[in-house]
Image 1 (cartoon, protein in one colour):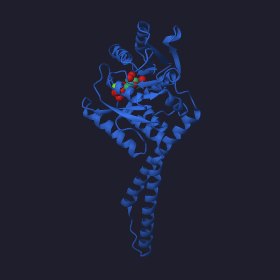
Image 2 (cartoon, protein in one colour):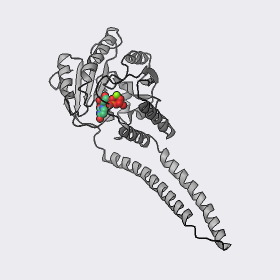
Image 3 (cartoon, protein in one colour):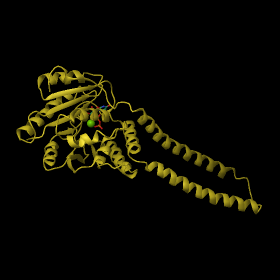
Image 4 (cartoon, protein in one colour):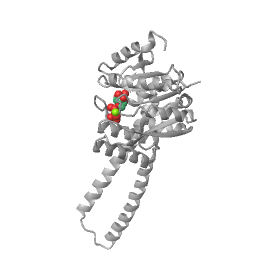
Length: 319
Ligand code: UDP
Ligand code: MG
């Protein structure tokens, strides 16, 4: 029997691009089903992430036009990661495989064929990896690549150049559901679940319409979230740095004592000021990093729901 596929698509203020890309997803679903790779009752599941424009009404309209389109709506905007998670958790008990993909047409939907093939060959997770970033601006390319390098240098295990375009089987999702953290960084968490995985490369195109919701500020926030959710390496680095500064200070103390004992102590205002400024700056940065982790612990202890679904398109009909 062919597996039942759910394509999970987070959408936030995407009224311009959704009417263009939605038929593309449906066409892909139908061609996969016609090729006998997936079952006919597969679905395209849109997750409206509290959009302020007409995104949800477009999704509702689509769901009335074709039964393969279904949608859920978050009660408010919670961010891309939470939207994807909401879709995955919604799908995990009703399908065999999920593929999450952005709704802007940047990720090549034709890679889905290879993803499904890899699943049929026995892989439970298939990561979509961007083979080239020619269509990205230099700035986007540079910041995105630095992002992956920095993440792995900081001890967060991620698949290089993989964003959130991936196939995950329902079997893996059921295990993944036990990862209860509220600070989500899906591309770092999925590898932790394990199971047989592979990658499929695709070239990334330009957004078909609308604007990116990931400016530099959000990318930095995502990188900080990624590192602090997956690794304690920054804390170890602080400790290492502290030891180094302590050693240097010890030598400084010896030097100061010897100078004083020899009666050659002079008023060293400049050196004193520099040391005080430097060390206090470093201390504040270190406190900030520790604070970042405490903030994470704080949010985790609250155990707030990671998503809240306010509406489903199939409230009035069966999926
Ligand atoms: N998105 C979302 N919630 C948000 C921001 C973005 O669900 O708060 C969705 C968005 O609709 C898109 C995907 O996440 O489908 C990726 O966003 P975008 O294309 O703006 O990011 P970029 O590709 O530029 O990194
Ligand atoms: Mg995009």
